[in-house]
Length: 254
Figure 1 (cartoon, rainbow, N blue to C red):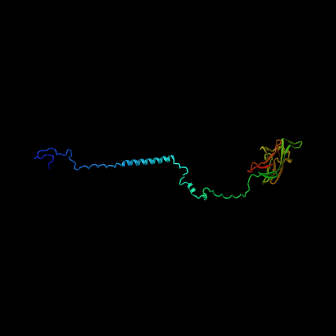
Figure 2: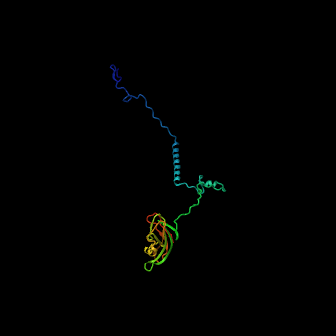
Figure 3: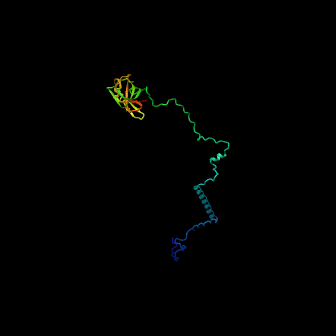
């Protein structure tokens, strides 16, 4: 087969074939033509611009109103407010009571049958339990300047207050009673006085009240003396329950 671009032996060479000025020859198929743009109507663009401006104006006014608040005019109430419901009710009808505003009925309080309790008040002549003993304050006398006789006596720095007491052993064993340190006196100012043991020895027969060994069921009667300033009036007598008991001290009001 002979090349068409080359001259045959019997035909002179006529030059390269004409490819229409293209190096690879003319295209086998034509390219598709570009689409022609459609023309928009002349009224469309102004209409869109105007619509956008209207939307922007409405949204801006709404946002400003929400920020600044839109107070209601005077005399105009909201349609959902409670005042309309009250205005629409008849004039002669009373509003129904609110369940939340009505307090629940309180349960009746039953009177207490028990009597009020408090510290028991003891007086002269009452039997008072104090530790291992039962005390009774029989009498009180103040203004005594001296106790004893002309040979054995005790003079007061101020005056003596004599407190006559009875002491009974209420336990099942013998106990030692000593007035000095067991019985104290107090005045209205709160000052406390101890018993004068020496005056107790001179002012009692057989030194009663001074280291008395009292058997169960037995009792002794003794005078306890307190050296106080002149004019002092005793208010209370305190009977110590003792060191080896949890009982409270007993107080007798004079």
